[in-house]
Length: 205
Length: 321
Image 1 (cartoon, chains in turn yellow, brown):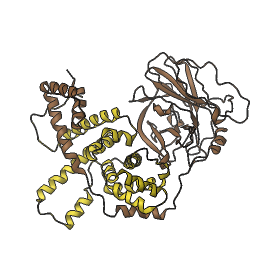
Image 2 (tube, one colour):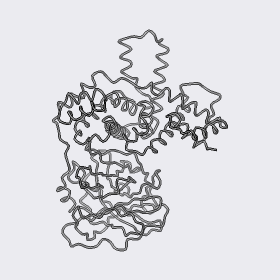
Image 3 (cartoon, rainbow over the protein chains, first blue to last red):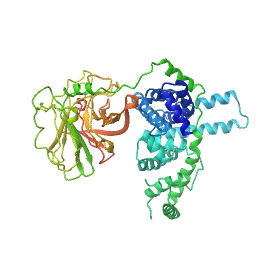
Image 4 (cartoon, one colour):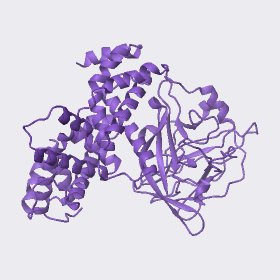
């Protein structure tokens, strides 16, 4: 698979747009999901995904195959997200209520799935919103490592390569991000699961 | 027996399958005695299980939109900096100093002399003190510009290399800063001082990221191991008039992207942000390293970072006044 990717990259670097389109197709979910969870907005995520691939196209000459193509894309994507968040922060408070996932909604409208009761759909949506609100409450540097680990399933090494960090930094940042997310969700009463009298409050940090 | 802080790291690593047998045993031992951490483990396991459900399919037309954009834009080879342009710029710019504060004190990575015209070569400011014995150094800022000193005109290749020995005399010094940009209005000087007030270095300049919100900016350094190479000043890509920033010069292969660090003060003048030049995007990438600015009574400002010990810098755009 890697050599197929290499062939596509070579071709794209030589100007073959169809080859690049294949690379986009293969990697767009990764970048889209990173941007979606970093920004909480499907529209912004789509825009940032386009921007990332556009930058990748322009910067192909710089990519020497020193890492997987997706690792390089993650780097471009996370930079684009961070820059975007910087600019957005200056303009407004980041809303903690997250827009509904447009994609999901559209699908539901087109193909109503009667396996799920409206109640369950609402619960799932509520869960997604609560989690996104939790992510929004994190610092961007916590958010990005947590998203890449938990949602994208990247290893510490892959995250370290993508974000040009030390692996140890990635590891400890993820731990702190998990703690911060949990703290936020508990404090806002949004913890998805088991309510609990057994959950100790105010865990020392 | 581990503490709860250590347990957090172990719990997190366990979720990622990154625990050694010994660490697993230590964690179990702690959990047996700590209900708070058991609760934490349960919660984090839950989050670990549920977060992947946030994965969402992108809009169906996203690839098309990407390719449309690519097709309609003229294909551009990545623009490479012109070294010749640099040198031209260098001849007009002030000297800069690069300061890196490690936990052990002051360490100079590099510094450079840039000519202010063709004045004769003079040695850098004399008597630069040796690195302080240890402890944190507070960088303080002053809004007064410093009278220019004569500086040697050195070509790019002759800029000194890294110098990390404690006690080695750092090169420093400010010469005249370039005319400030009208909108930044910053003609600023930086003074780095030892805790006892003795002066270590000064440099001055201004820059603008081009972002309308950021005002004056300054450049120093962060503790990146890669930056232990030659550092020199150069223009902000896309902006002729610029100011000061730091770049690592190209290595012998000529292909390594130069590396630049830039600090920007936000519009409120309360935070300084570190940006790294992202060559592949021809744009500044915010590293989200933030220093908070505190005004001191004597009119100077102190910069403090949570990343204690790793970075140091001084900045003083006049916005701080």
